[in-house]
Length: 179
Length: 182
Image 1 (cartoon, rainbow over the protein chains, first blue to last red):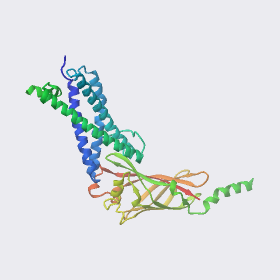
Image 2 (image 1 turned 90 degrees about the vertical axis):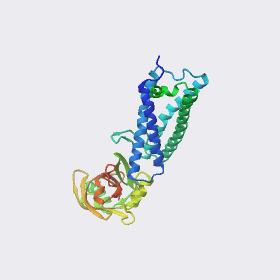
Image 3 (image 1 turned 60 degrees about the vertical axis):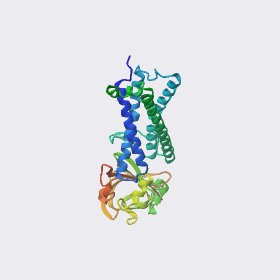
């Protein structure tokens, strides 16, 4: 039996991490940036990357559901519940963060044209109050996502350095070949 | 029968007699769409003044004058509004008004006209052709509506760092609705 997730899922895992890091960095930069052409460009990239995370999510969920591997098989019951909970929360937030961003964009009257080519439908009409609400929700969901990503990474490092059970290497197969 | 006809005619013509028209600003709007990073973003002007002086029976002999307070721009975001008033864009401090004055109105079908005139923005005057549709309103008055196309470079709007049309497009799609009351 396979002792890790499929290659596509592993690739999607790291791709998603890169996309989230990029979107987060851009989002943080944009907060204090005065209006300029660069800001408009970075804003566009922030939205495009966020939408990519959102649209990759159903693919990831489907592949994970079809993949026979269960990462929790060597865990104690309470660890398995915790891990399952964190993973579920990560998936929910990967849905909510870009979704709130998209809703904010729609409500603010700045629709998303994906990569400058594909116009995405407005989820709600233009509404200043609603735009503020979705902006707040977007920000809160991001903070929660950051906390969970850190927790997730800390758990992986804990397994790697303290438990030495190959959990990190499972997601980083090239790491195992070296050791 | 003849007297009935003349009464009918008189009732049709009478409200159009006393010109110019009063503009119902609460129901009138001047808006535009401009693409930013290929995203159509809607905006408008909150304050403008319209002089509509024409006889509905012969709009060809009429005159439209529209004066827009550029500082009252709504770009869709607060920081955009501030930026648009700056020298790179409208330079609202030095050129507070954008003015359109019609020179010629010609009929282009029932209720449809083409209005040509001069548009002055930021001290630059360019000819502008505007299709105009006049729609009778109930109980009275007329809706004058139309669309027009502008290029921001023609008026030096958004120069310097903003010149790149792939970030903010050169084309501006304008539209207006003016409610003219007798």
